[in-house]
Length: 328
Picture 1: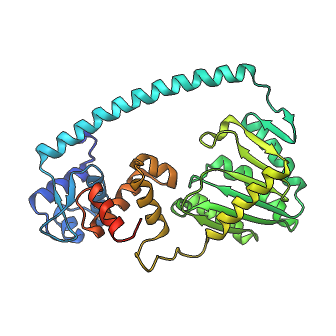
Picture 2 (picture 1 turned 90 degrees about the vertical axis):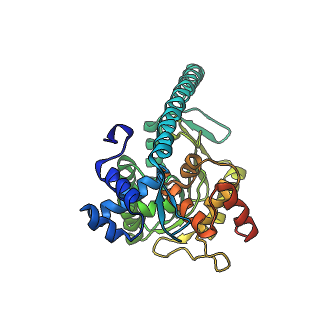
């Protein structure tokens, strides 16, 4: 009945079940609804995301269902807001496309001046990467943000990485923490370590960076869209600054096979600390998920858990209590 509002049948069943009887655990609810525990947990997660479930005041640590009158009105309003947001994004995309077309009309691709080379297009970037990797003699350093890496990116990198490691080149790579939640990318990172590379992860990486033999650096022209091109520089001053940035990130990162250490004073993981700071700065859930390289659902689930730990019923109250406890 509620499929028109975006609710799958098993999610609707869980919602109805919680309306009838909110007490009891996941196993009990699953048995009552003839669902698997996995389906029940997924339904609960989706209902929390949709704000059809919220922390119960009567059952500490439990959830209660929002009344249909209020909850379904929230869903409809959210859908209307989503349509408006998409229309705004389309307008911005059209304006950005017009700007890019204008810039490309006068841009000379793959030009070089004062030790810097502008590479326009993925083909030009890939060709330069292949050349730089083949010329590698000692060390390759990389910051790779964004969590999950595409199949095409991994397959293009594999032969280059294998060749460099076979020659004895030292490779140090920092991925974003969210890579641990993407099986294919995590498998590739583990393959790198098996081949002799050193791999670490960090909660937040702002931009992609590659440094070859501490003398050549490759960075995207736009940190938000790598397809616009890259800048390859041999300027000693710029390369030295980028090396210092890499070493700072490397020292603060955690080896791939190790778990993040929870801060003893707060009991928070680095990702939770970073999430609180991002949201306290006024960043939306959507923007925070992009910065952390993770899904919007994960960010909302983590924030719901933090609010429960803080015994807060609103983001504002959570921010106040987090500051009072010294979490920010």
